Image (cartoon, rainbow, N blue to C red; front, side, top):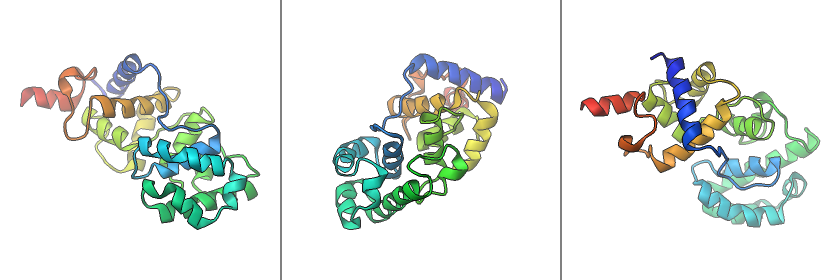
Length: 213
């Protein structure tokens, strides 16, 4: 089986197992998704979803957040961790969206990564979920599982993104990444993947090695 064939098999298996490929973060606007994704760095989506209701109630758009008091934002997001840097980035990004992009998020990874605190993972999520363009979100689950499958042989997010863009159908790539996150939480759990019940065990290189061990 070629890498391309393995990737297509993985896409089909994930689509059957997780038909609803939804982002786990709660949000109502594109800017709120940007905020939630920044908060999710080194923090669980579940924790972010507990924090954002109060944050979005007080600062629902980039206009309010751009004028926010730094200490107040830090207090609201404290439990997400790394709150000093995250609060600074959120206010800076809000100001840039308001003043440079006139209240609308840019629709390319290149422009989005100009915003404070926005890396390629966040930018790809926005491009895929908001603008419905081909995107590859290199979440930790995506990196881990695609390595186990044998689709990639690197833990570097941008190299994983580049490799997957070559293997995945563009119109499937964003949903595939969402599904891998769900699979990584339910079955292919870090350090203890349950290969016996995995729908990808017949073509996963890690599962093949486990079977021979």
